[in-house]
Length: 334
Image (cartoon, rainbow, N blue to C red; front, side, top):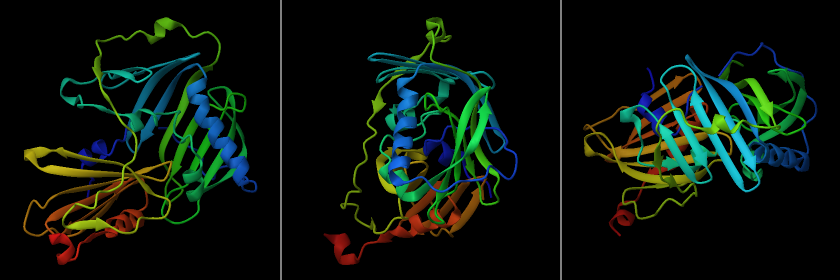
């Protein structure tokens, strides 16, 4: 069964990556909590505080794209431009909280998710390390070169069975992430970002920040998480997979005017989405599927269809789905 692409897009996943030699580097002892926290903070800051210009490759399953990124950190100014170099032309220019996009004519969203903008490679680590370190322990795993630049390799090992391992290559001088990989259950690369060319620091040609196409300015949504409201009359959420927390809720009208509630969860590295919509038919049989590193579980919940999808093992989407329960009739009537 193929996972519907609409769920992947709605979950805020921007697809792209490259292959890795099997086996991987040998790991050392885990970093202490203090060392790991310092590393996460340094790498999270590096993509914001350093100027850089590069081309990276993003491969996700059989999808592949090449992207140019130009980032200028000049005192209080934080300007970034991205454009695809193959496939359909896509372009983005961000200056502070102002975002302009060039997309295919029918692909423009009503707004841009602030959280998604802050997670684009090489900005993949959160600025607060506490939640991330609750789900992963970090080991230093040697040295390598990425695009001719030296890198330290770090492995993020899951503390439980509810998430995948990750591997990162970090520039030791600046702290900039140069390459990232999510590793699947058969030790296969699921998703990979890697710079093929990179300039860190130095003079950035400001002409590279000039858009090639007319951009449409879009509002930036708040990225703040909010609690699930108890007034939902028929269901509630009781227990989440360890380490995951709600970071966003949204209600919107989708195909045929159906009102869909979207809950976005994160463990600091990956996201899982739960979609709740009116049941399209009388009965819906449970459905479980996996496509690459994306797991998908759909089941009936009272008069709703609940669909959970994310970059996690199948057990995680099932556990999160089972966290949604029907309210007792007396509670539902109040």
